Image 1 (cartoon, one colour):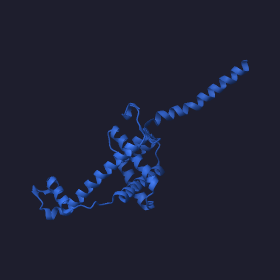
Image 2 (tube, rainbow, N blue to C red):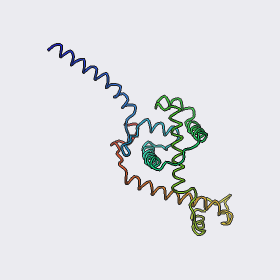
Image 3 (cartoon, rainbow, N blue to C red):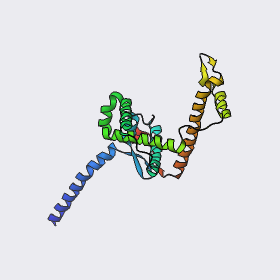
Image 4 (cartoon, one colour):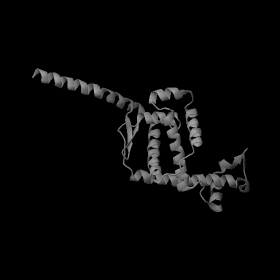
Length: 210
């Protein structure tokens, strides 16, 4: 009987020792959202904010990471062309530049390393390629639609207090009207993706409270 108790006690101790690192990891990598079963963690949020992938505050960052994961799911389904290694290197350099002097601290705090930053850069380029492939780079507009944008946004075409004539502003107005129309289309598509997705969030949405 005593031998059995000793064995049982040893097993309990071993189980607790095995579980302790898991508990510590959960504190460091708390799940803040799940998107179709894919976990988004606290360290994901911190790293993404530091690299300029998402905006602050924390609640906005989480929403943007949810959207990013939804788009990555679509990218995995339709597989746009693989970005060139040189383009990935440039994008990775841009991400690290955004982090600036805080990069070493961010890497130590979140566990993110240069290979993961390169993978994030690759994801960025694949997302952009997919969106361009699906929605086009420029949306075709009629002359009236361009003129309407010019009339509605005069502040964008005012230089030194003088409104540019439409004939001069037309190329810029077309570019910005096209970008606005594309953004509206992509936003509606994102709402549709969210409507079909399984998204779960904890009760608290502030990173500091996870």
